[in-house]
Image 1 (cartoon, rainbow, N blue to C red):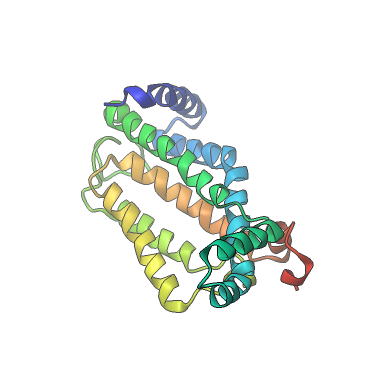
Image 2 (image 1 turned 45 degrees about the vertical axis):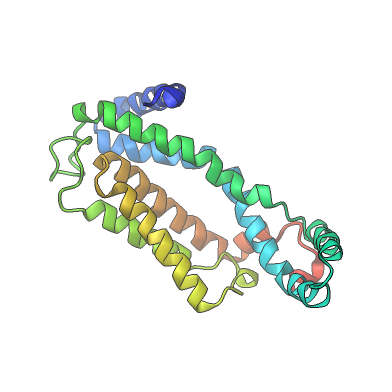
Length: 226
């Protein structure tokens, strides 16, 4: 079942064993592993965040194009491409982070499903081992709520153009995804996701600072940054 992901599983198992050697707790080792994975993927997450901000900045121009060129699909595509070039929008960059993280998540599931029964942690005393699902669902619920909280914080003022109802719907979807996936999965997978959600929350709060906003707006046309 995990043959395709075995090289990633082996790499993660090696790093997890290394982190356990100096944390002496498998739960803490999972958290450290999460931080290492997040650090390795930070560049991709930053690119995705910038694309979100650029798309929001270009939204008024794109809406105007749909009004003026709506009856001419060929011209609409041509003008849309020009706007994308003006703002440096690359739709593939937005999805790249998620595409990379999916095999990592699948490999994490395989790792903990296969080896989690030999792992215990004082951080999660209500489970016998880390391959067991959380019987009280505390970690899945906390993960879902954190994911919802992250979605409610806009990346920057320019990205706050999403309507309240759309943002709420998007937040509910992001709440349900980790909740459903981790509900009966090994608790270690939930811990990995929870630690990643905490990292994402701190990352999102950083992007709300003046330094973070400048980082996200780098490369935007001057008119869109004012």
